[in-house]
Length: 289
Image (cartoon, rainbow, N blue to C red; front, side, top):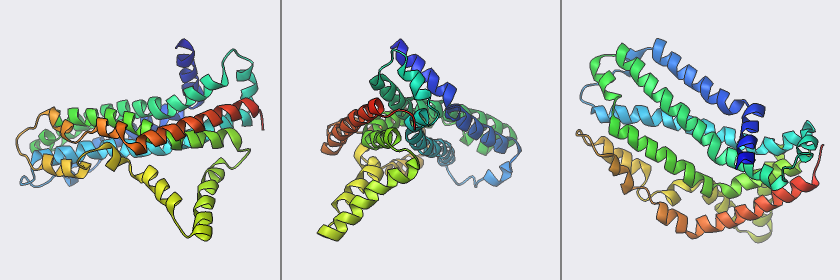
């Protein structure tokens, strides 16, 4: 366990963008809250305060989550490739650290550590922005941003999505690690070429689009797989109440049991495990570029 903690620290030392990007996002949003046109955020008193608060909390969380997803994908493509490019792989292979441990630490960093960093940054930014805007804005808008139960629901939603996206996108993350450990250059291009070639080849030779459909489901079918009712339905139902709702409302659409037991999740986990094994084997055999 101590080895993994040091390897994760290494990722923070070598990839400062892990914490610098969310820090820069937080600074920018706080500057907007401090010096932006707060009066533009003023809404009619006919709009329920919960609607305003929910829109604010969701917008900040969604912004951080979107940037986190993009950066995590880039990190997975670069992490093993960069070791070979700068020849630091020779140093790390000289240490009593197995390639399996190295690959798994990078996978955990991308799927767990980076989302947790963005989660913490999103929470702190949300609280500071709400405080700043509530001081600067008129009482209705300032009070609307302090919705304790909605804030707790966002926390539960963040944690749920960190766990479920790590499982759902495991095959995608493992595939990016395979490319990162194999490609000698142009890792982004090599990550796109195989699926595009398979889709075109299947269409030309068989006239079907099974591969394209399965890739689409894996890339864009997360919400349907991980939630009972859609997030949109929850948002509409929550915003329609003027009286506070309990934090347990979020349990009505979280469906972890159904998600973890679905065939798509289990097949994806199996494919991900096979690709992780392939990435480890390539890491063993590939040295500097």
